[in-house]
Amino acid sequence: MHPLIRNRRLRSSETIRRMVRETVLTPHDFLVPLFVVEGKGIKQEIPSMPDYYRLSLDNLEKEVKELWKMGLRAVLLFVKVPDDLKDNKGSEALNPNGLMQLAIQHVKNVCPDMLVMTDVALDPYSSYGHDGIVENGRILNDETSEILAEMSVSHAQAGADFVAPSDMMDGRILTIREALEEEGFIETGIMSYSAKYASSFYGPFRDALDSAPVDMKNVPKDKKTYQMDYANRLEAIKETQMDIDEGADIVMVKPGLCYLDIVREIRNDVEVPVAVYQVSGEYAMLKAAAEKGWLEHDAVMMEQLTAIKRAGADIIASYFAKDAVRLMS
Ligand code: PBG
Image (cartoon, rainbow, N blue to C red):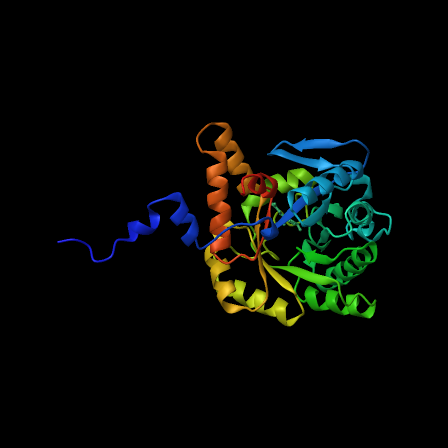
C-alpha cells in the first residue's frame, strides 16, 4: 500500500516551495505608521516599542527618504501634542500650522510621491484622552463628527492623500466625505477604521502619544462606548458595510492577529480594499519575547505578517514594515 497522492512532493525543496507559495509579501503591501513630535533633532525611542521612535520634522524627512529608498511607498502619520495645546474639543487639530499639517507638508516636500495618510481622531489633542468631545461622562457623537470633518479638510489642504478616521463615531464617514466634496477635495480618499475593537493591545501606542484616557471623575475610563466589543463578529460586518455606504474607499480591521477571522469574513463580503492594523501591543509582545530569547524575531514576524495577508489583508499597517522589507528578496 502506498498513498495515491503525495503532498510532500510540493514541499521537497525551497525552489518548489517558493514556486507554489500562495501568499507573498511585497513592500507595496505596507503602510508605515510614523510618530511625529515638536522640536528639532529629536529621535526618541518609545519605551514600550523598542526600535520605534518619535521623530521631529527634520528626522521625519530623513526617515521618509529612507523608506522610499527601501521601496516603502505609504505612511500613516500620528502626532504627539504637548499638554498645553490639548483641550476637550481638540482645537489644536484645526490649526493650519499645527504639527500634523506641517508633517504632511514636510513629507510631501522631500518625497512628493509618498502616499500620505493621516490619523483623524481627537485623542492626541484631547485633554481627556478620548476620541471625541466629553460631556457629563459621555462622548458626544455628532458634534465630534463635525470636528473630524473639519480636521479632514485641514489635512487635505495640507496635502494628505487619504484621511484615516480612527475614532468610531457613528456617521462620521458621510460627514467627512461631504465636507471634503464641498471643499473641492474630490480626490482625497478615506480609509476608515471600520471594525476597530476596544482592545487592550493599544497600550504602547498610547504611551507613544501620551493619549490614554485620563483618570478623572465624569470621564469614561475606557473607549467601550465607541470602539467595538471584541466578542462581536456580525457587528464588524455591519460597521464595515455602513462605512462603505457612507463613502469609505478603504476599510480596516484593527487589531490584526486576534481578529483574522474578521478579516477573512470582511474580505469575502466587500468589494473595497481591506487594511489590517497590526497594532502596538502586537509589536511589543514580539519584541519582548525576542529580547528574552524566547521567540525568533524575524521568523515569527514574517509568519505573522504573512498570516495577516493570507487572511485577506490588501494593506498592512505595521511597525515591522522596515524589518520585513529588509528580509524580502
Ligand atoms: C486612536 C488610535 C489608537 C490607535 C490608532 N489610533 C489608539 C486608541 O484607539 O486608543 C492604536 C494603534 C496601535 O496600538 O498601534 N484614535
